[in-house]
Length: 302
Ligand code: ATP
Image (cartoon, rainbow, N blue to C red):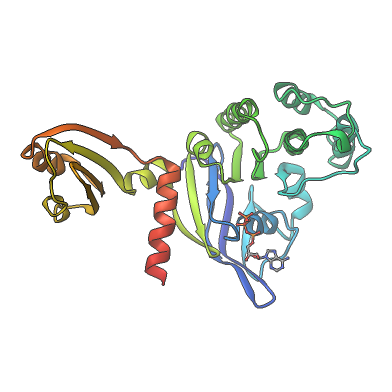
């Protein structure tokens, strides 16, 4: 992380009555960075984004966006920050053009060039009423309004939800170009292959706590890898079970599958002594790594 901070939170917490949704989150997102907030359903992603936009008040801690206080300077924050809520909706009779003109007026930013550019890339028809748009096209309009006033920072709650693969690509390219020009992006998503391609860093939120922050390759590097050997004759699982880094071995007939962390060298050396006929490997992607991390965390927690 090199650029100046676009988001800084310290000790951020939010309770809903007696239910703790977010506890002590310290988050830093820099200018020029795409940061992906991951977490299972109910982990607190939407809550954090809503606190940052001052739509709900934190129970503890504070947040600064572009050097402004999220609460005290919330009017100024809105003029510099774009926001796509999880449940973006407008009056059904309004057309896309009308929605954009309305947002432009409210934000004091009459220039619709950026909005039209993104709408065009997304092949969004702006002359149709919201009520007649498909889910993915409604989402596109939500995304377009978030970028309308050329914000320095955008907070996007599941931006690609409902997007077809073409729109996902447009979004990916758009976010990368935006970050390359110095914009900062905080997005939440369950589309992990897309986060893997788009985000510079990710944070994993579990039960309201930011448990892990790092680059995508740091998370995938720590995840379980898998290798499968086919031997000429059956080989017992015990041959591999005590090797360093090996977590799980399944032997079915002459096929042995190992899940492991770290280097594969020792496994290959041992396998070589048993007349292997073939070997296939599987490198974890972000989705594997995320599921693996959450499962391991839950096992330790219980
Ligand atoms: P998802 O991936 O399902 O969108 P999320 O990570 O965005 O989930 P949040 O919507 O932030 O999760 O919810 C965090 C926790 O706060 C959940 O336990 C949820 O039930 C609770 N919560 C959210 N909004 C309210 C509310 N208005 N009143 C009470 N509890 C709430």
